[in-house]
Length: 303
Image 1 (cartoon, rainbow, N blue to C red):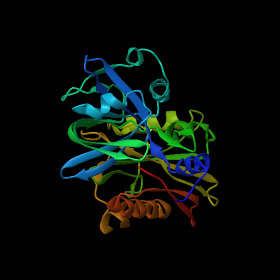
Image 2: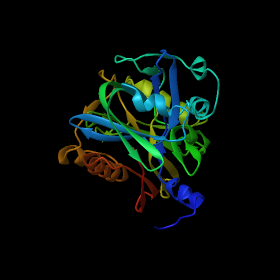
Image 3: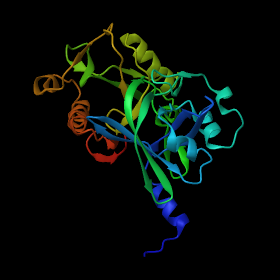
């Protein structure tokens, strides 16, 4: 049997960037229980199944192993404190969060990126963990960007964008997507472009929020999708991939990125970015572009 250094193996596993969730249920007396986990994964669409891994050493093991169901709360970037609370032996953890019973009964948190209320489909013993497989009975999602985790640290791309330069030569674009379509607006020459603005002195986050507000859509700042330098224009460009909720924009329209639409995009670099987005959207595997307006590298990320 192959022998590994447990710490080295754990560190290697930790290079895989994941989301952060809090998994919840009730004990036999109706008391809510929960723990932080980054082992959440989708399993199947038909039937709708998800999985989570629970350590055999967990004090919640017996309760979750025999529970009729459980909830998965996908934490947003602003909920690192929630993750920390449910990762430690804190008394009365649920007193620190705003929660309610979901449609099937599992504790569901406010402010999350998404939640899934599940019935227990199957449990599988696997080494030093128990795999909980749940059938999704109800779910919901928001536009809030999810909290990431890699190499033992939280990853918050949207929030960390504020650390970028606040100079007047930083251009922010919002790649706002809904149902496979992207919000495009007209420029002064009658061509198409993404909603775009200069940051000025307001900073990246404020500029992006103002840009979304002016478009009149229900969306929140998402992940950095592209970051490049235009040496000829002496400008830095940063594009955020954002998810929009239902509703019609006050500016522009949601359009499919077909050949005709792409030919009408005013900026060549933006057109290339949108072509890449359409290709990645079809396979569900997104990356972050780093480079200049001509060439660069796409680094894969998880969504």
